[in-house]
Length: 232
Image (cartoon, rainbow, N blue to C red; front, side):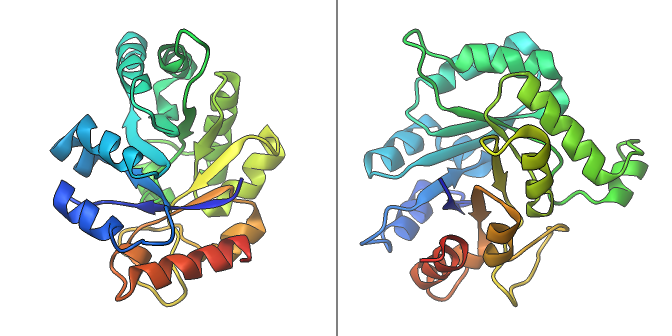
């Protein structure tokens, strides 16, 4: 199950495909986020999927349940592998998203929920969001709500992946951004970890962006992440 997902946080189709063209031997799992999706729309998803890549469509839906249900129905028509919502949208919203995502034949992409963004720290959570519980407890509560809603897992910091598995089960997915190769700049991430450490703590999927996309040799950086995370 373990895999490395490359965050393709580019602004245009041309940049994205130029980056992916460098991978001649591998077909890495990729994340398409808001920037690229809003710039290029569903056509970029179809094009990357046609090239043979698995896709995590990272749009973080968060709205009233009926709106999320209808939006998820639209996304179900794209052949992606993982989509997500914000756990803060309530159990009812997550259940509605799951219902909308499920196709008439019962198949669907995996649905996961964002707990707290890895750019959020305890200080910001308390002072700006008025959430005064410890970060770890907030993440666990959101993860448990996602499980109650029938979701497949959560997006969380790698620091919390092991405890999520303890609380929600070994088969409850942990998709962890905030991954950096040793020595790389943390950027705007507050809660980060190396691929090797994320593997030890129990992450199922790691999402790696700048450590690969801004590397002098992206393919070599990707292979190093895979080697560290999967032990290959």
